[in-house]
Each structure stands twice: as structure tokens, then as C-alpha cells.
Image (cartoon, rainbow, N blue to C red; front, side):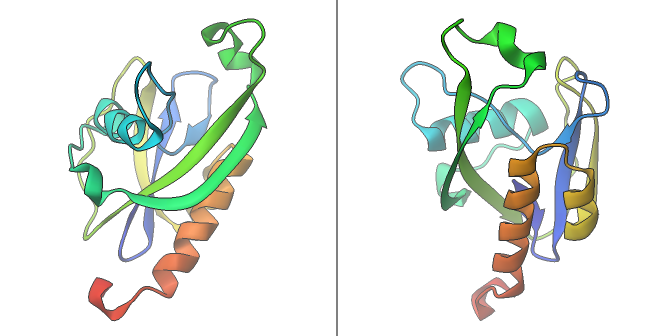
Length: 142
């Protein structure tokens, strides 16, 4: 999940399924831990390159069924994913370099608009969680 201190959230519109908006997501590659995968996916999907320490581990995991649109990416016996939630909070919105093979469009929206546009339950929940953390952020973040 990528947001600004002001509470704007980045969503990406996937090439498929049509009309599917989500945050930066991805899968672990062999030998990666979740933090390393989050950093790699951040680069691949947005062009943002930041140190691992910049990623905030939200200490939350969600297990969910793999959607039919992505079933072919997984072995036949794999039916669910375990999602690890990380966030990147930026001072201001940044220009995003999309991977045209995965995403068609990027937009920055306030939390309610982003939660309304996000197509997955886990994205909506992550937006709400991060928005609540930003609302109660320490003075050093302001």
C-alpha cells in the first residue's frame, strides 16, 4: 500500500481483469522474504526504488482464495495466497512508471475514494488500516 502523509492512496488499474483496481501486489520469488518481495514489486509496478527500511510492516497477514483470473500462475494444488501487508508513506504524491504488461493507469485518491475503487476486500481493509494509522500518526510524521 502506498500513501502520502496527507492521506492520498495510490491505486493501479490492472490490464486484466478489466476494471480491477488495486494497490501494489505480488508474489514471493524463490529465496525472497516478504519484505524483499514488497520492495521488488514496488520497483516493478511503480518505478519507485527505496531502501527496505522505508517500508512499514503493518504486521498483518490475510489468507484469501486465488481469483480465477490468476489461477494459471499457480500450481494446480495451490488455491490460496497469504498476503503480507506493507506500506510506504511518502511526503507527497510521486510520478509513477507503470509496467504496461500489468497496469493501465495509476491514480491517487483520498482514503474513502481509494477504498471505494479497490476491487479486493484485502485492499479495502489495508486502506482503512493505513488511513487510521495516518490519522493518529506521531508528531514526527507531521
